[in-house]
Length: 303
Ligand code: GRG
Image 1 (cartoon, protein in one colour):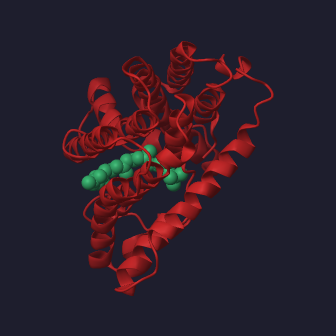
Image 2 (cartoon, rainbow, N blue to C red):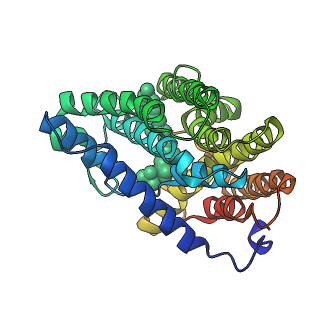
């Protein structure tokens, strides 16, 4: 299994994640000061700085550095990815969507600030994301910044996250095939993870071959992320309930374990992790260690 084939046993992955996340958190804090009108900036900061694993920003920084770029070149892009991810969570939690009360361990944005403010906080974060990349990226050629912005835009709009969300909403309560489930996951989850890796490589100065190898890596990691999410959903709720059947097996929500069985879903996750790692063979082993470990972390994460 990929867990047993660590690229570089000396690589301190937890330290790496912590250092990168700290860097991103500081940059996000600076990017959204608590200014007037206070209410909207408070709501933006409330969701943006509420924790979260920072997987997308870290993937972006790691990819930039793998192709030889300076970390600083990708920090605005890393922030933009987290702003977009956060706004998608705020809108996903709204009463007209998933109607959730809790997110990242605290009340959701609309619970804390009201629905109007939550919608606007999402809108403001989405707009700021693109402004931030365009205005704050330094020492990267304009052509690369433009390519990265186009990549990001297509990952988010009606061919990306929004496409996944609309298909998810319209298939609610219906029997969903494995193909439709994959479509939803690829768009809702994988597209932004793919943009994280690809945009990092673009602003980092990667050539066409490097960018495409990293795109293939990211597609595996993106789907892996969601398959693991589905597995955790089942195994966590089973553990909580002290039963063998989790809540997803009991409800009609389509998930990989529900459609293919828990064992098969775990096997599928293992295959995706292995494929992701194989795509990194194109790069120097030591330099690729962060992305190698990130794939393994996503495969074995517990939350
Ligand atoms: C993007 C314009 C635009 C609108 C939003 C609501 C919506 C359209 C899309 C839904 C996208 C969504 C909520 C996808 C789920 C993604 C996912 C796997 C979230 C969990 O991510 P983690 O585990 O969370 O990285 P943390 O909290 O660690 O950041």
